[in-house]
Amino acid sequence: MSPTRTIHLLWGEDDFLLREEAMALVGELRPREVDAVDWQGGELSDLMTPSLFGEGRALVISGAKDLPPPGLAELGSYLRAPDPEAILVISCRVGERAKVPAALQKLVDPVGEVRHVEISRKDLPAWLIARARDSDIALSPGGANALVEIVGTDPAQLAAAIEQVSAAYPAERVGPELVHRQFRGLGDQKSWDLCDRAFGKDLPGAIRSLRAIEEAGDDPLMVLGAMAARLRDLIRVRALPERMAPAQLAREAGLRFDWQARRYRQQANNFSMDSLVRFQGKIAEADRALKSGTDGPVVMPVLIAAIAGA
Image 1: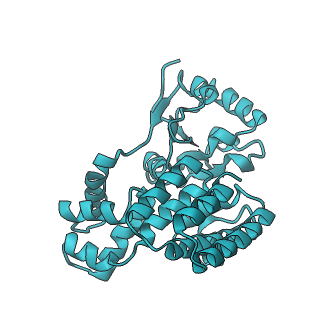
Image 2: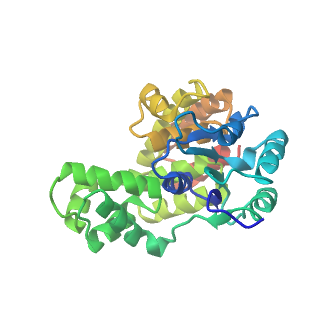
Image 3: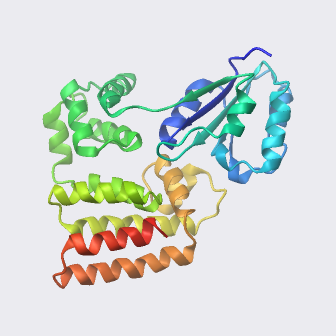
């Protein structure tokens, strides 16, 4: 069977980029979105049932690495004779340096596209400029480089930062001066990366991020405050219903963006509620130690290991 343009398996390390690419592939269609951990069976039936109004059909499966065996079997059955008029996008987030799951690739290879979705560090400024242009924001190359330098390499945070600086200075060309003016003093941008890695259970990445913060001379109490704030957000998210839509989850948990709700849901699900509450105690212990004069390089690695290695 020759590959079609309607079956796509996307894989990579970043949920934000994966979802952006998935939405680009479905275009103006309104897809049904399913998280693999919520798979109930029968989700693919929508693709095989023509719409009463002749509308295009699309299904986006996220977190496909977590598809249960019955889900994989159902997917394999559909891919043996996929509907050429329906779009199926399968999105799979993998760990650092990991590959696409072989079982998924084996199913999709004969009938569709398997593609790695990533943006290298050196390509981020060009990506930012193109993204800004699509939103009618004039971002200079210097402004793009400044955003990457200050905010970091996380695409979702960079996308939010473009919107933030543009809203603060509407109708102005966004160059390095505006970027530095908007984000001056926000050393917590690096702390965000540390929180993402620690609560994402990426211990080696969290330690690397912590080392970069220490080398920059950031106050460990400020970093600890960022971790405490992230933990409070995760506890609020963990307490809300699992099936709540990202937009509603963001509102209920007091988050600013839908992408934060999706990311924080994934991070919160790495831990039980009891574990999250226990981390509050560990952060309080670290706070007392720092305020008692214990050095940050002694206190912080122990805390990071307790969270990321839990």
